[in-house]
Length: 166
Image 1 (tube, one colour):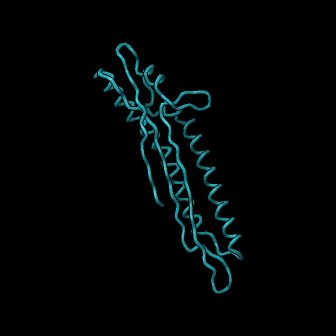
Image 2 (cartoon, rainbow, N blue to C red; image 1 turned 90 degrees about the vertical axis):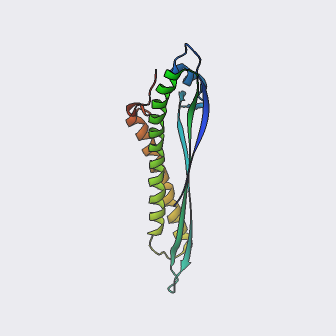
Image 3 (cartoon, rainbow, N blue to C red; image 1 turned 90 degrees about the horizontal axis):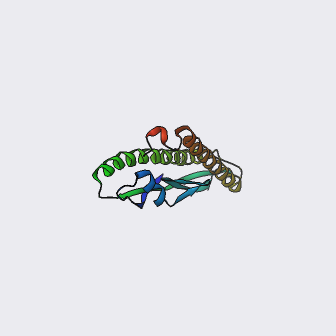
């Protein structure tokens, strides 16, 4: 499996007299389900496999590569207020922990896809094998999406992990 995880930052301009929550809500570009979010992880999993035909004419997987790309969008604070910076520092650490939970769900799915494709039995045709491998990958992707949704429900979008600020 090949993995590429990166961060994308958006600026949060905090002014004197403004709460960090107000500054975050004004600055976030992240929208979904009619709400504003302060962090987001977008992941993508792609797989590629090769097959060979054995001496009996059956097709089997000879190699599989799965790529995981994830981009975590989180805020960066612009403020001269040291107290706000300290508070934000704790907040951002918790937000990163939450977002890395989404990456971990995707990482596990990518590894499962890779392992699953490699363990497929030989089939009568390579077309059959190709279809089986892609069905396996698509099913595991859907499971990962569902797991991500359940993770957000369970953690209240990170709130139970300390992702809240006043």
